[in-house]
View 1 (cartoon, rainbow, N blue to C red):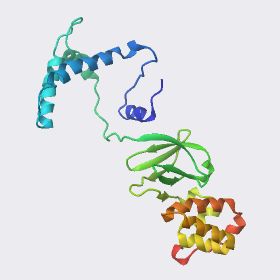
View 2: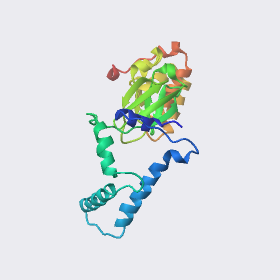
View 3: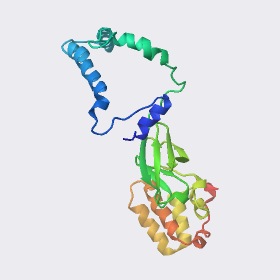
Length: 242
């Protein structure tokens, strides 16, 4: 058994070890399952018919039943759960980390030919040398981080709100694509017009079939990949984008 990355991150943050139960070895988790059953009997079942009018009132009742349960003597050994805690667990306790644990999801994605990855319907660039390769993505509450073979290769501020937004770093682009950092409809049409009549008609159709302008950027970028670098040199950036 292996820990999933999110669970492993939490364990590393709190500097604890997690030992997964073995497959088809029920005794590995018997104590845990027995503890859950005892709590269901002593707390949940005991309070199931009681009506509460606030969470504070509910928590007070739960704590009272938990103390009763912890102070109840063991049947087959000396002491109580409370005495075992004070004898073994409390002396080994350490202070919590200064920084709070931040939950994050992990997923594996394939980098598109335009060196962007799609995460929750948003697009983030990675170095172009990773195109068509699989990378691991850590999705935090504020940051999206990209890893290849355990090494972080880039990070982006996480987009919120409307889908299909693009975050593109110029240093992730090949030299012949860096002119496209300021991509817009007008910019793409100007480039297409200077490149050739057929390319201009194609780019017009690309923008005409989408509801949101940004949805056409990927197709335009792929079109750039297919064209020869010598054609791209013809591009003149609009003054507003200099």
